[in-house]
Length: 116
Image (cartoon, rainbow, N blue to C red):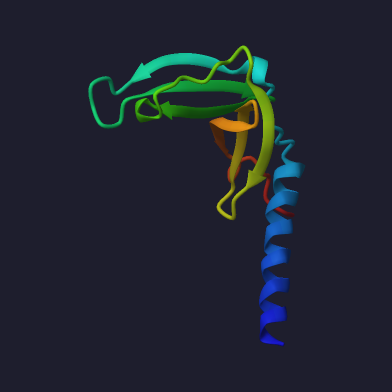
């Protein structure tokens, strides 16, 4: 019985977070809105290519590590799945031929107005 209560509580928490994101009008940016910002942290262990997109007044950011040996091909990128974490971080994955090649994130924890 305790496991059922735990699962029920987890499901309610997940639905509440998803509901907050939906209420805030959070949607993944169109792949065509993603811009390549270039290389950051060149010559370090954290070198990568940064990407940004703006959708509905919200800014999304992501990067592809230089260790992945590729950049996201923005011309053939297609939107994949989106999800919301328990901390309010919204994640959108984009793919080329089914493989996830770019992940953009946006902090939605400050986009919801407080309840009255």
